[in-house]
Length: 297
Image 1 (cartoon, rainbow, N blue to C red):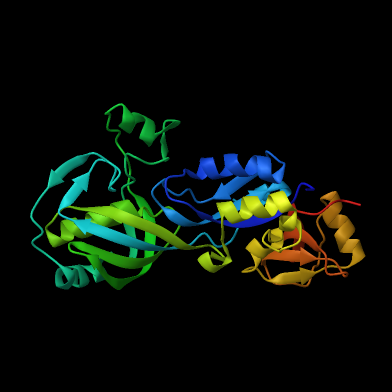
Image 2 (image 1 turned 135 degrees about the vertical axis):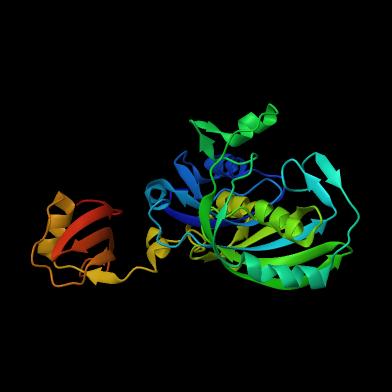
């Protein structure tokens, strides 16, 4: 198949790292130029947006980094990783349940500070925390600002387990939230399951499994079935701007356009043939290119 450019929403399988998914797709897509937005732990499943070719430059520029998860807490257990894949550090009788959980949930909605877990890719002095954690080391960390927009109680799949839907900002660790919820209830807690159902503009309904993607790539269907979405789709939350040929030439040459009649802000830009050009910023009546995602003719 011809090397594509775009975004492929993948339903990441359990047991795979986000890097494993990229490694598997490199051969199928015929390119090494792949990236993703928002790492998922190996135990987690769900939305992993894979950016392909020239679209890799869009991963850090997307305007919507918010996430939604379905998370299952297991009470009475604490591990070194914050989930059931880790080494058990503490067990205790489960002395609280649904009523206590529902009572503490409102405390964890809104802006707050969260301490990154040791088993995470957060870098301190250039080294990922998980490398220190694997050596049994603990590194001093600084709490970071996050926002939890909402938490919905979804039920109890098993004794001592409770499932929640969590909508949150980029950088929120659901493992830490699970432990903090347990602490507020007076019992140890860990994450038993995690599924990401939304990442930015992409939902789980738009995702396809790895086996289906690999089969489609092998048959050639991936070029025509619409699973690889255009790079502009990730910029849907931004307002659109159509420019004339003169302004288009300025953008291609990196020249600002003065006295531009648009409100200050960031825009996705199209030419008069409705072809997506890229991103631009208007500030003080001056239009400047941010990033082009098209070929310069």
